[in-house]
Amino acid sequence: FFDWRFLLCYLLFYLPVRQFAGGYHCSTYGGCYALSCLMFLAVCLGGRALQVPGWKLPVLALGALALLFIFWQAPVMNPSNPLSKRGIRKNRNSARLFVLLDGAGLLLLSLLGTGLILLSVSALTVFSVACLMIAEKLAERRRILQ
Image 1 (spheres, rainbow, N blue to C red):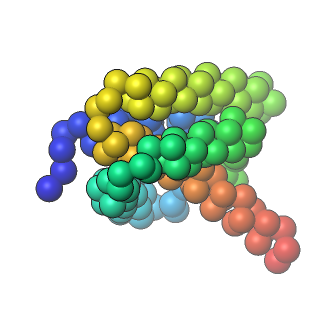
Image 2 (cartoon, rainbow, N blue to C red; image 1 turned 135 degrees about the vertical axis):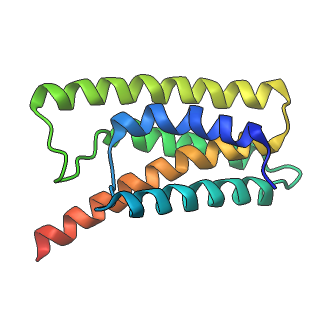
């Protein structure tokens, strides 16, 4: 069902930036595992669905917009994982470095002609990180309003 390259792209584009960008965290390990599996499934299925001729530029644009958002907003802190000012600065700088590396990776995938599927999986992966950051920002806003 899935190609091993999907997992490789997902892990390379997800883990480094997610570690420092922050965002939504489940309250239990079981919830975290389930959400992680669902996200991987959605990214892989989405990557397959985006196999439309001529969609290379929109896929690149989606990845670029997600990376710009991450670069601008990282780190998004969760109340269960507070950071010191030094920690915030370290995470921001690290997230920005990995955003630049992910951007270079997206460009490389588009230039190598590896097929639209790996580019789509990678772009959707960074988009999923941005979605987790947005989810935490919305949750924070709800907490403030209550």
